[in-house]
Length: 326
Image (tube, rainbow, N blue to C red; front, side):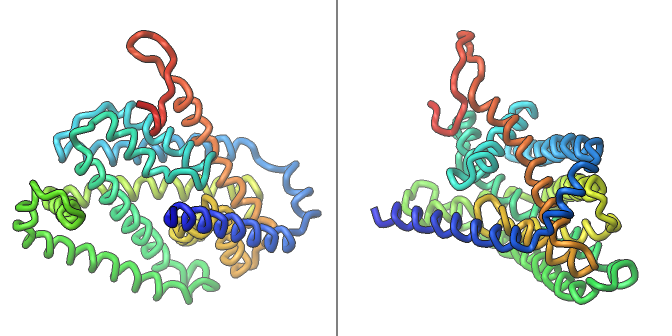
């Protein structure tokens, strides 16, 4: 009962925080500028950005499939792509109800009920490698910032430091796991500690080569995502080089993963506004760009919603496909 109350209070805080930051940003918006920009919106760029989002999800699917095969789990890529789309529906269209990774894990566990621990391991490892790819993207971009965008050069050193620290921890992980043979001895124990140790032991099956492959897929997905944001900026007439987006979008991604707002709403626009104003841009442009980025995600979510509502079973009847269905 207490835990349920804590969840409700935390959700209430996130809702209030989202409303507050949105109210502040909308107060700063130049509505005359917004009215003048929207009729000139380049819909061709927006359409390509939406298409890139589906390609982004395809890259993430290849990453997951690559990792699952290392654990001897064979799954059709179309099936994994469907799981991703459905998880986007719950994470984007119904924010705050269930996290997208939790939904994807639940769907995969129904498909492979005997592989629950392995599936959890793959999703956690995906997240870790994805974060490393995001930091690596920002760090590589920051190396060119002093010459290309001098207004943001103060951010270069902290980004490089955080990236080095993250990769250092990743290296330590591979050193520590090499001494974890004794963790497999708790296989018949059902306590919490034993479950955690068994989960960690699963990581022993992940080599540096496999990790590099997962990071490579993550980098490809990150590049696709950044290019999509750049196209949306062009659609709005924002005059910033693509390097700006390669630096800022990874930082936006890190910010919206913090569970302080509903689906990153408000936080995304706030971070964009901070950096765009720093290079002489406009708050109104940043808010519009943030909304467009969210709407491209929403397109994925709506496609996943259609898949989650209806599927055809072996008997030809329509059935619900959700993490709750049996």
